[in-house]
Length: 246
Image (cartoon, rainbow, N blue to C red; front, side, top):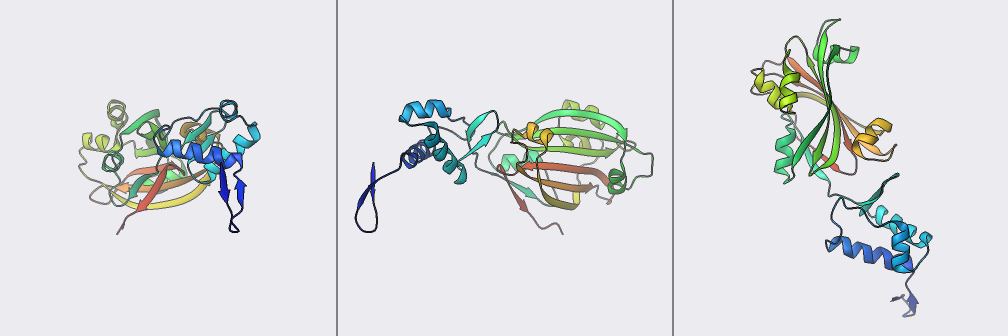
């Protein structure tokens, strides 16, 4: 394979560019779908008849172009198109994903009742010594993890919400079972951070990968706080769209 420079001189194209273009074409052509794992460096080296350093350069360029991403100890994967996730007065996970044409899912990590910490007391306007119900889970889009979250509820007001969520892992469902037909977002804070080992493991990301943390409070129709939520979004899989919150 060759290319011509500005003077008309024909030059041989470096093999890493050939590999880059070949893999890029195969990905765009559907041979590798979003989320698929690419062959190993050894397999690609054998296929193209080059050393691993050349393959590594091609893979690095694919990553720089946003076409693939690496997971430490797992391999190189085709990047998913980012999920557009609106954050507005009514944040509804299932509705947002269905509207984006993706299948929503949740993997429950824990359901527990415990004493509220100082941040939770302040966010939910609870007196010292209050208990809270805590729902921790990983949210998926088409089977791929896109966020880890915890939802914290006042235990006195929602004594049965964890049992309801265990049957149907949906905050909206839990509120409906408690007689709350509608709720809205009172405030949201967004912060860029890096994934620690726990969050990285849940989101299948390298430790230290960029994630976007959202913290917010939802209120009932009378303005009483009913949920304090923290969500960490995988930075390369989600585009947050902030709607008018007023």
